[in-house]
Image (cartoon, rainbow, N blue to C red; front, side):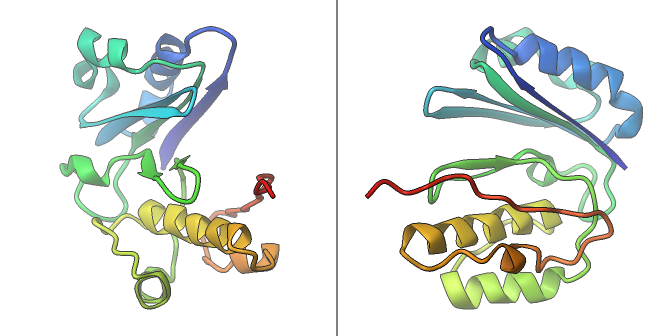
Length: 173
């Protein structure tokens, strides 16, 4: 069980994401995180504990942007106290992707091995969300590199919840 919020606005979203996470706090008390997008720059802050105790004014001032994702976590995998296990997760290639996820992948060992052997991608945590964002990055990179993107391949992570990957990004030619 976790709580997820996403906001897109013409105004700064950091306070709205924070307030929304306060309302979702009952969905997870182990850790929390917010990512915002300001132009081509992502700002990510992930902390242990509950929203009100974790984020300080200085943290909120650094979360600039008009798009944001927030997450409160109830740990079902990995360490509840490790901030590295908190979401959102970010990868910088091929475009820069931030992901939050609620669910459990059941084939994490196979995905981690495949990511390493195919892309030499190494994950830093035992979080299935870190694997999922790297699978999505791999599929997008295949599309950018001229490989034909096959949506059914992106659904290969088997999950207790449904995780659908849709790419609307088209590489410039």
